Amino acid sequence: MTEIFEEYVAFGNKMLRKGYTTGTCAAAAAQAAACLLVTGEKPAQVEVELPQGRHITLPLARCEYTAEGAMAAVTKDGGDDPDITSGLNICAEVRLTEGGEITITGGSGVGKVTLAGLKVPVGQAAINPTPRAMITQNLRRVLPAGQGATVVISVPGGTEIAKRTFNPRLGIVGGISILGSTGIVNPMSEEALKQSLKVELSVLLHRLPEDMPIIFAFGNYGLDFLASCGIAAENVLKISNYLGFMLDTAREMNVKRLLLCGHLGKLVKVSGSIFHTHSHVADARLEILTAYAALAGGDAQLLRRIYAAKTTSAAAAEIDAAGLAGVYRMVTENAARRSETYTYNEITVGAMLFGDANRLLYMEEKARQMLTEIKQKSRKADDL
Image 1 (tube, rainbow, N blue to C red):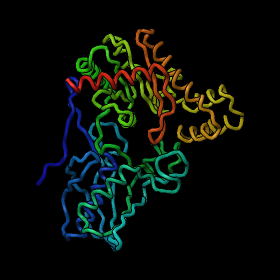
Image 2: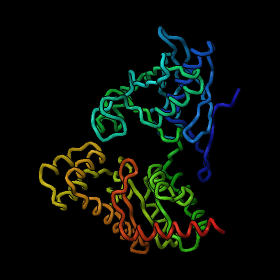
Image 3: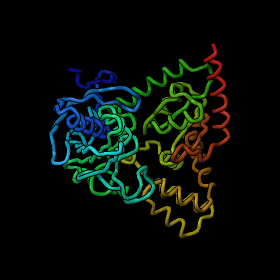
Image 4: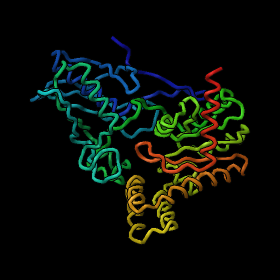
């Protein structure tokens, strides 16, 4: 039998265990249920393919026939990450159908989207696009060619747990969300992660061409956006929520120029001098956007709609409809200026702002110059 997934990351003198996302659990459970229907055998574990093509093996909590198909469950394990969903069983009931199509819906314990501005349309189960793709991909690995299936994802206890998450604030009702962009949960012990980022910055500075600006992105969305701009992930430091700490670290390491790339939901906080961007620490996104919209000439009704929006994506839709592109300029320029002030003006900071679907919202001139320079120096380094 293949070894069950177990990986660790070293942070200082600690070893922290990685986990796997609710999306990975759902994909593994769906594949196991389909395997039972196709082969007649109940697997004790299942090998699941992750978005990057890697395979990991997970244990099954349950696998059994139902009245119309089969059901399997995988227990969510977030590793050493403080994940409120750890311990929940992520269940998938699969029924075989004709026609080759795979449909995925949510059952008990999986939330339903009620407000616009999220990655899932209003009215659908809160199962994000990447987990949906993982479920489909892993079913195709075991289903005969041309075989269709319906999949219902459910989470016993998910309705109660969801009340302790941000889902109610986002308009997701009735359960948790099925999430995960990579399939793996990396431990987020704050101090350990900060020290790891410090080491990563040191390594990056030693590897990059001399005098080349460094790039900070907050997470995977930033990496994806920069990739669309022609910047390789290996030239970017993913800083999570710890911009203030990393600006201090960059100043200590004598960094002189920095390109800050952020989604609207992150960079708007920085523009308001919030340098730890986790929502548990501070969250004034809509208040800041409302103020900028007022400065840009928005009327009172527009300001009320922005202020009442549940997400920055919904607020951006209002800003776009009103033609107030100046809001994005203010977000970007203020984020750069306040980052420079944070470093006592020892680091020149350029900022670029993007929205959903990798849409560039604004790039200030310093950022444009840095981006051009980074591309040129990266090409020269590749040619050596």
